[in-house]
Image (tube, chains in turn purple, orange):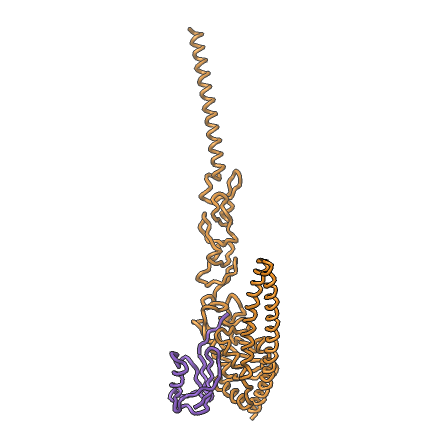
Amino acid sequence: MRLLFIDNDGAGFADYVHVDDGMTVEQFFNEKMPGRKAEDFLIRVNRQPVARDHVLQKGDRITVTPTKIEGAA
Amino acid sequence: MEDIKNTIRIADRIRDVLLRLKHSRYLELARQLSNLGRELQDLTAVSKKMTVALAHDWLSAANDCCQRVDRLLSDIRYSLSRIQQFAEAPRKSVPTLAALVEDLDQVQEEFGNFELDNERDAISVSTEPISLEDVDLGPFRIQLEIGKLAELYYASPYRVIALEPNPASTDQSVTHPHVNGERLCEGDGSAAIQAALEEGRLCDFFTIVRSILNTYCPDSPYVPLADWDGETCHECGYSMSSDNSYCCSFCENSVCEECSTYCRSCEEIICLGCAAKCEVCEEPVCPKCARVKCTECETVCCESCIDEGLCPDCKEERKAEDEQQREQVAGTSESRVSSDSQADSKDVRLAG
């Protein structure tokens, strides 16, 4: 199924991705952000906070934003 | 109802500006392409000059051409990256009014507040109080100036304002390690911020800025947190923590380790500005001890170098003079003794 994935980590791209039906938010995160901890991110589905076992639906909008981003001078 | 109307009005305004931004994106792309064209023409011209230079064995001229090519290639690389950035832009469509309204609603939910300043044409959110490594920086307002969104590629359209400022003691305009003069240095968040603003994802924009404010990067702050409550060296202006500062016992200014020393006579700490120099051993002395001078030549001397009120050179001279005097006195005594004994002999002879 097709989802809109907005990754605010790094370049901050927003693009459509295809995932298996019945995928949960946790599974989606682990696939798209391997090696990262979900606690370090703000994850929203259709602009709402959701539980890790929330099942994604076709057309969902998922945003992942790091809670810590290094600035500079 | 009024709130909903306001939200729709703001969303409509933002949409207008994003359309203008799209237009300015195309203008900037055209400008960058024109720049690239000029740079390629310059490259062609240099190439022709190089051919002529080589035909005449003018190696120095060929070398100049090489340097020119090197500079042009750097400029061209930069132009290409800029062009690519803008050429990708048409894929990003301006969000619908409904999407923008939803986004503004999400801002309200995420931040619990969202203010509209009609005078400044800006929307703002406030963060929770921010504390980094036990330094309380207070809450910040992230103020996005809607009209300036259209100038995103030339100037930053937002400000980060400290609401309960606790600025660095060495620079009042630094209210956060990564904020100077209400401008955030975005660091790793730069690309994501630009992408969020281009696409009208305002909640993402505010969230990313908040994440940067909640993170301390010790490698590149305007002022390190370790020096936040520190001082500025009075001599060189270096920013130092209170633990690493020295107080000059003469002028009472704070100085850094590099700008401090101690008087070799009284061992008090002094700054390099106050320090005088023993003119004999060239070691530093404080202004008070520098009043000690040789009574003969008035050379400034430290305690180690002055002896009975004299500098070593004058002491030597005095010693030499004393020696000479002693010799003279000795010589006089001998001749007196000699003439006395001659007189005695004469007396004896006369008596005999």
